[in-house]
Image 1 (cartoon, rainbow, N blue to C red):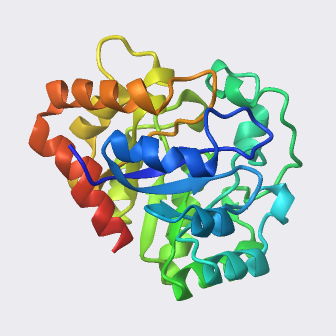
Image 2: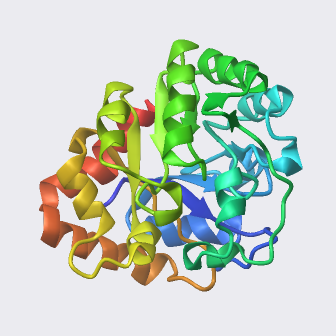
Image 3: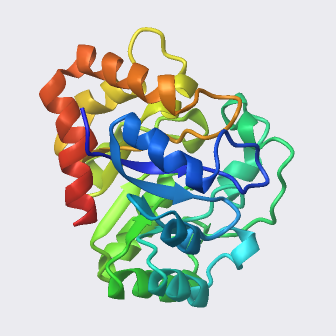
Length: 271
């Protein structure tokens, strides 16, 4: 399989140890069937880095404390430099901070960012409105990062009301995010895409059925996209990670569904 879209790739330079740098990763991903990929850095923006890497690289920005959290200027500059995805806080999110000793977050142990508050008393804080307006105006993808799924639904509802058209939920079945069955209806109503992928399945720990298979059963397959979330040195490299995941997914879901998830839906979300 080729021309896969991978929405979640980590590289160096980073304060977290990575397998490869921006220049090495493109050729390796291409060999694994990835035609387009989003570079993600918890430290800030990868817009400039993606432009230098060229090929199928796409830039993004993560709204953690190093860029000032809800910073519309940072979003605007990243967009002008070619970024396509705006990630809500990850390491800075309150949910991450509360659960930072979780084994599922072991890749980030020892990394401390200041908290970036997004919601209070189940309502999105007003400083995020201008960020959402910029995401809408630039037709960017808003990704949930490490917000809880409750917070994600709240923010995505606000985003839709402000005109944001492209929504992406990251690795939602990881325990610390608090996924519940009732979230399915809310997210489907919002037209939110949901990420499935290599690391999410590895961290899920269900030996009977992968997170990908469960989401493919519970969530519309037309709204699932692929994000490997690979790059950390303590987890598999691009190969065998992506190849093993593809084989497992094809056995569980069939080749047509896997092609839909990894290629067609990803292109639709980016189009």
